[in-house]
Length: 243
Image (cartoon, rainbow, N blue to C red; front, side, top):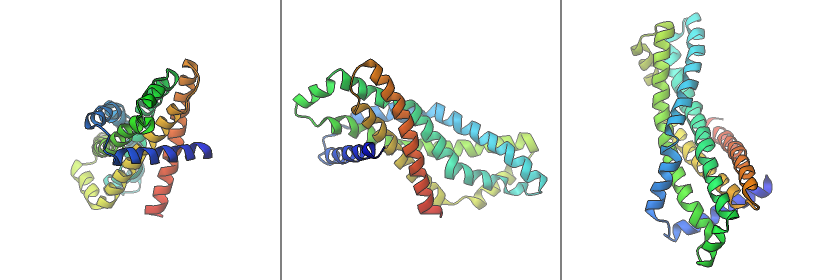
């Protein structure tokens, strides 16, 4: 894991040099943004809605028993914005788009397409990594922002149908507890999660050697490593901003 982390750092430095040299095509970024975030939007929102619904059921019952149902909306907003939406949405994107990135680059590596790029005197790391890192870092926060809104609304409906909590009481609680700082931190999380997912999965795919079997193994490793690195990043962010 340490050597892989060092390889990720090296690839990140090469990618930044490639980006600042202004060789990245805008059309490539848009194409990758659609593949990474737009195509993962449905599964991300589905997972966040289900998670929010489950938490709403648990929270609403307990709060109703203690007579604190006016705090349900605020509690849901904090939980969804701080952890549920960023974490679950990023995990969904990593599982769908991250593995696709790894498989695509791994396939290019084992079929010698990367060597062909080198013969054209093009930096392969920057060429393959830069559009994916930029697209993921810029668009994953947007997916998380949408997921936060959808998750809070899902909690509202669940609370209304389970304990008959009036929507106005839920919304008032959300507004009282909602902090723009939490939203900014969640977007910052989304940016880092996006970069980590793209960087780790691309690095795993780029380091693949062998044949078709190794591509499958590399894809599995990309899913595992991206999840681990993302959770470590989440832990560090929480220590920095909330400890």
